[in-house]
Structures are given as C-alpha cells and as structure tokens.
Image: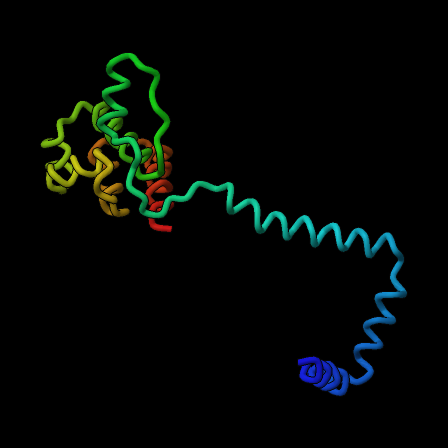
Length: 161
C-alpha cells in the first residue's frame, strides 16, 4: 500500500513539475495576515454552506403534523392560534381566510375560480398541493390585491421547490 501511495505522489510531482514548487514559493511569500484572513474567509463560507441550510425549514412533502381543521378549531375556541407547520398549511390557511374575507362559500369560490368545490376544499384543508393556476384562479375569484396575490404565489412557488 505504501508503494502505491508513493507512486501516486511521484507521478503527481512528475506531472506538475516545477509548478508545485512555484505554488509553495508563492504561498510562503504571502504575509501571514493575508493567509490568516484568507483562511478565516474560507472557514466562514464553509460554515455558512453547512449550517445555514440545516437551519432552514424543510418543505418537502412531509404531511402536516397538525391539520388545518385543528388549527381553525383552536382559533374559534379562543385558544391562541397555532403556528402553521409548513408552507402548504400556511398557504391553505391564507387561502381560507381570503375566501372567508371575500364572503364566498366553497361552492361559490369553486364557481368563480373555475375549480371544483371539492378541490378548493382540499386545498384549504392542506391535503391537496395547489398548483400556480389554482392559486391564481382563487386570487382572481377572491379579488385579492396584487400584494396579497404575490404573497400567495410566492408560497406556492416555495411548495414547488
């Protein structure tokens, strides 16, 4: 095994020629502060690439731990509202609130949006993942402002990622 390793190192040296010595000379000519600063920057970037993604919420198709109906029941019972578990649940709650604010029933929301009433219901329950067309059609049916529509479309976009 030692012989194989030596042969690889020897082959690398032959391949690189004087390039390895040139790189070594260039690095040793740098001031120590520059080497420390460069190493610190690399360390911060590495930590950022490893730690930040682990801190972000995962929206990948995991079924909700708390149903939207349970959250709505808590809100009606006077309990403090539970924070939505994921993006799908947040989108479902916001679409339900938008429908209720517009004064539409599920049936009328389905008619105005061109979606089946059962589809609208499952989207609001959080059991069906809405498409961008669904969110756009419901936003039109509810007469949402451009800001509200964009917020809902952004949530739907995050679901597709």
